[in-house]
Length: 396
Ligand code: ADP
Image (cartoon, rainbow, N blue to C red):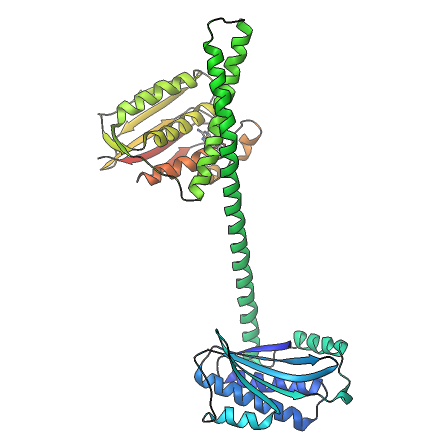
């Protein structure tokens, strides 16, 4: 079947469009006025019968080609539970008008086909058919209703196209996440082995030379960095796939912060980590995940600050039922625009791209961990005047 025009059958106004367009197509293929009217009447009768039962019908008007012979055709599809009989006047009447009339049942729809043969003498050929199709594509709306309908249809098509694009990009995104997950796993294993060998080499009693131990120290530091990057990649893909799991345990928050700070002071010796804690508060957290939040916030505070500056970690019982932890630095700070986006996946401020290394995943992961613990995370910062990151945790 060669579809030339389609009309959704929703109300009486569509009958005018169905009639005019079937007349026009019959005229374009060269049929006589009498045949044009007969065809258009049959089409309108069926369209009316369908509209009386449903507003889900669609009318297609077009041509059928069998070798060199063409047939003028109209077919209407409608809900599968509707079946017309000769008791439906329009159905009964339309059958009498066209030489070929069939009603068929399908799984998702039912359909009526109406056909009128086109005499060979009219010399219809594929080139003429293309011209006719082009005519209908460029045809001006028949009336104001048709214009609105056409606009609606193109909006609908656009929306469908956008939906499809969105679906495709979701599939791509899922594939990418899956790839990152597999790649990170594969990369993590050899790095862990390198790290283990480095640690063994560092512990060897017979220290061959000072130089070798210095180099080993460097290898160790770089492997730790690499492992943490791969871990971040793994976490992002776990988050995307909804696989991030938590093992909550009850702990005293201050004790945990003190332990964390001691470890992190060792990792970031160039900055002074100062603590200002309130009374000990019991919280239920996944220690490993919260360690990630701390090391990301303190790591950033150190990364985006000058050497020898202070990083203040404080804890208050500010809001009822919540402990509020703050990590304050005296670093480069950030603009209002950066503040809005820092918790987005892969976001990095333009001005740090060239000066500081990173993947823009740390805060995204940290914010997910905090919200999954029932808390909130936010930042207060001014360019050139340092930043303070806050996050809350529910108190037991
Ligand atoms: P990364 O540090 O790897 O770029 P993050 O997700 O940890 O990724 O941080 C996102 C962005 O937020 C950083 O690129 C930086 O622009 C900004 N940022 C984060 N922490 C600070 C901070 N303490 N001071 C200034 N800017 C920061």
